[in-house]
Image (cartoon, rainbow, N blue to C red; front, side, top):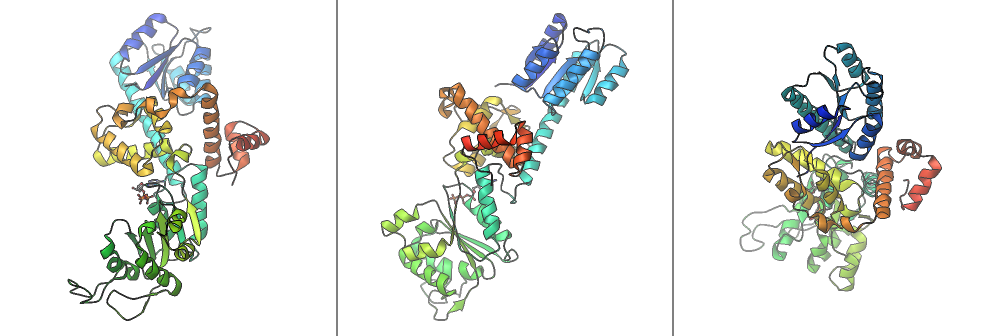
Length: 449
Ligand SMILES: Nc1ncnc2c1ncn2[C@@H]1O[C@H](COP(=O)(O)OP(=O)(O)OP(=O)(O)O)[C@@H](O)[C@H]1O
C-alpha cells in the first residue's frame, strides 16, 4: 500500500540518507533547499515535514530555514513542520514554533525519539483533517446529510423551502441516494416536527398485506384479525407519512390512497366509519412514474396529487466532491464504531473513490467503507481494501486536459459551497477575480444559486 508522505528538508546528503532509512514506514520525499522544499510541498502535499533550520545559502544561520518554514506554512497551512536545530539552539527552536512549527528537535539525531515525534505529528494532522471534514459536514443544512456539492445544496434549499408548507412532495432518485434522509429532514423542518414520522416501503410488503399495513383493520375483518389495529396512515396523524417506493403500490390501493389524499379521510379494512387523518404525505420512488403511467401501472391522477412538488435527487456520481467527503465521513464513523485504528485513505484509494460510479449510491458507499474498516490491517485503506479497481475507474484513460478540467470544476464547486454561494468570497478563496470566476462557472455549467 502507499504510505503517508513525509518530506525531509536537509542539505547534508549523509544525514538525508540516514533519515530516509529511519523513516522507511513512510513514503519519504526529500529536498535540499527552500525552492525544492516548496516544489515538493506543492507536488506531494505531505502532511508532515522534517526540516533542518540551517539551509543553503545560510547553512550556519537560521534565516533561510525560517523563511522556508514560513513559506511552507503559507502554501499549506495544515502541514506539521518539525524543525531540526543545532545542539543547544533553543532560541531558534522557540522562534520557529512561534512562526507556526509543530515541534522541534535538536541534533544529534536519535532516530527512536524522532520517529515518535513524527508519528505523533501524523496522528495530529489526521485528527485535524478529520475535524475539518466533520465541521464542514455539520455545517450542512440538514442533520445527518453530508454534502458539499452545489447540486445537492440546491436540493436541500428546495427542501427547506417546501418544508413549512403542507405540500405533498415526491422525491425522485436512484436507490441509496438519500430519499428517506431527505424525507426525515423535511419532516424535522416542518411545523409537524413534534408529530410522528411514519415510513412504509410499499415494495417491501406483500401486496395482500399492504392495505391493512397502511389503513389498519377492524376486528374480524379477515381470518386472523383478532383485534382492531391502527395502520400507518392513522399513526401519522399530526405528523408525516413517508410512502417509499410509491411506484410499487398496487392499482386498487392507489385508488384508496388517492381518496385519502383528496378528502383526508380513510376507512380501516373491514370498517365502515370514516376517520379523518391530518398527515402530510411525502412519497419517493426510483422508478420513472411517467413510464409507469404509460404502461398503466400508475394512476395519472394520483401522480398529480403526489407530485405537488417533485424533487430530483442527483446520483452520487453527479455530486462533485461528495464521494470523497462521504468516504471520509463513513470511515470516521466506522472506525469509531468498531474501535479501529484505521484513520484515512491512500491517495490511490481516494482517486478510485472519486472516479467510481457508485451505482448503489450513498448506501453502497457506506457498506463498502464499513466493511473495509472492519477487515483492514493497515492504518490507511487502500484500493484493495475497498474493493475498487483503479483500472475500473476510467482514470488511466483520462487525458491531461480532462484531468485539469475536472480538477478546475471540482475546485470551483468546492469554493462555491464553502463560500455558501457568495461569488466574491469564492473568488477570493480560489485566488481569481470575480469575472474570472463567472467565466469558470459558465464554462463548467455551475450555477451561482
Ligand atoms: N448525504 C448523506 N449523508 C450521509 N448519509 C447519507 C446521505 N445520503 C444517504 N445517507 C445514508 O445512506 C443510506 C441510504 O439512504 P436512504 O435510505 O435515505 O436512501 P434511499 O434513497 O431512501 O434508498 P432506497 O431508494 O433504496 O430506499 C442511509 O444509511 C442514509 O443514512
